[in-house]
Length: 204
Image (cartoon, rainbow, N blue to C red; front, side, top):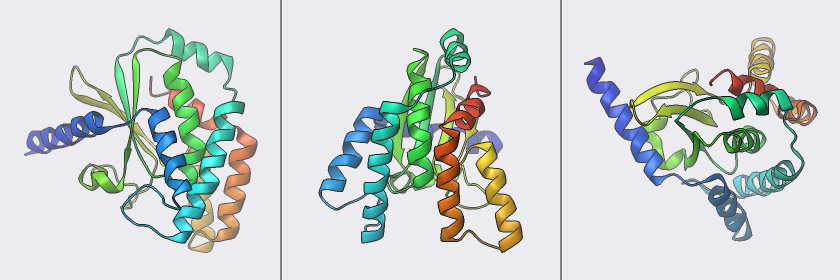
């Protein structure tokens, strides 16, 4: 039974890779949709468009200014790997806007990492196999070896320190409110991708 399930998940991942976009294509799509007052994904609303607009600016800034620790870049450059990073995401997701530019820069450091980006909503069946506490939290990175057809690892939706912040806040307050979400973005801005890069270096 388990091997059948595994085969089904492998098929869904390979379909995702086939349909996936490069990071540059994804960035162009988000920017284009924002001009049309739209977001990626199947649900459209003014709020999601506004989030997408903010995230488009955020990713543009990070693509230009992001500097990753040289030791981690060297680690990626020297790693012998042949892997696909398949990322489930949407343009309106704040965590994804902070993470994807880091993911892209790390993937660019190693020719053996092929980064593909897909819409969560359009790959619901695949997303259901990578839930976080029962929810479809994004971004979700699946590290997949296309030769051995193995899921090597997965990461997301948030870096380890941010995950701890979220869990602690939920425990104390029951849920995440706008005030916390704002403080989380402040944390991301101060951290400058360091925690994400640290986490992802452990996937090599």
